[in-house]
Length: 251
Image (cartoon, rainbow, N blue to C red; front, side):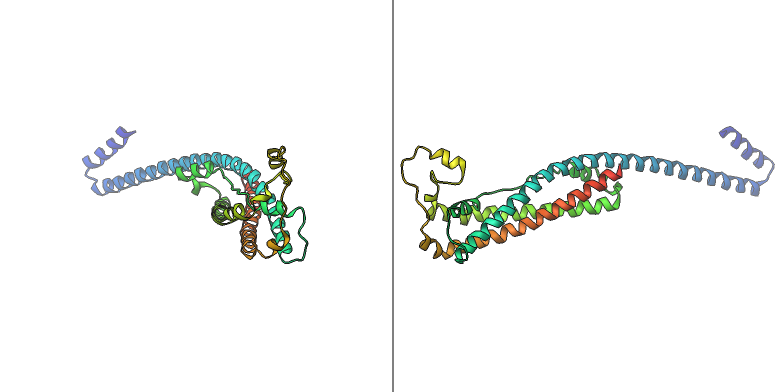
């Protein structure tokens, strides 16, 4: 084919048809440019198709991560729901709206518990590192951003809550209420530990407890912290479920 075009050009030059030769050369250049553009277009199309397929494959990992996250988020939602209930009960007892009872020590102890989530981000990290997130459906991109932003907020709130427990609530508990850890505890592990203890378990002194304003403030602090986390867990659960549905529909 190249020899054929070369012969045409040579014939035109030999015949002195310079203008025709120039027109022909220009046409030939245009054909080459068009050919290159078509080749580049095909190559880009193939590359985009490959990147999209790879990104969608990574989305399956994201979906698996979401399922693992949901197990943790649902547990934490239930845990914080119970913690909110117990902190409210303690507050009502401080306010003398409810009497001190045999559950008070359980409420106090429950607010000691440190909990945190450990989300699996392997899928989204792989997509980000590969630069293929832009090949994912725009709605899914937006949902991914919202979900993982919410997870970051959760981790930050958990850190605040657990730090408060370590620095303020736990030291105060062990200084003023450690005697509630005894064979009469509502917690099976504690009862088992003290099962052979012959001493009479101590109970909370109602007057001292009701006048313990620093501890009441700590209970309020725990309530506020847990309330923030509780709302974020609910939001993350909703976002994760919506994102899962969207990814599954994208297959």
